[in-house]
Image (cartoon, rainbow, N blue to C red):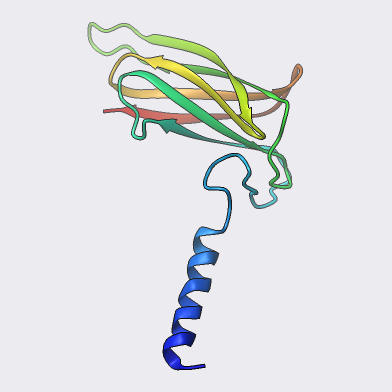
Length: 136
């Protein structure tokens, strides 16, 4: 094997290791085992803009596999700012793909929102996480 080919092969392996060969955020990904359920979030558009924001949650079990058939309740709030009152919105994310849950929230004001996602299996809370969402 020539030095150029060897270098190319090493670069390709390094890229594969760094970025993985997962499903590009489509819910068919696998995460490292943590022993506890995990929830991740992304927004569409990214970065989010004031108005309707599609929020997507990726839910994984403790082994890193997508969790199916659960529910995720969502609450978002932004504190009062001068004459503007505190705002709150709520929603429920429904499963679009295995382990991928989505909803649309109306984040009507610019600023730093706090978004709380609570993943449940029936009445039992599996995991809860707070995500900061900045609306420029």
